[in-house]
Image: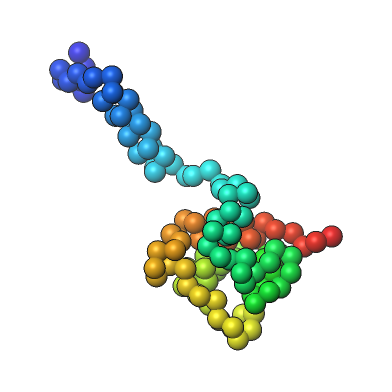
Length: 126
């Protein structure tokens, strides 16, 4: 028996639980696969983003495709948008403020970054 085993025997149920916990822990330590466009659209819908933003048309806030176009050549674009999503912002697109989505736990930083990357991936209508 190995030193790690040291006489410990787990039932089949506990073995599966331990394996699942190990996989979960490993997932936390490795970079997550990029969120799909469909997942990001669902997240934006669930958070009410489309109340103020359209993908290709301006509402209260700018169209997401216009945001992507404005930041297309900015290497810090994802971080800038993540910050605007989490902390709110005013002034870049006019006087109407964008509310913060972090203070009450609406979105976590990873979700905000994934949303920002999705927005930046959008293309203008041909």
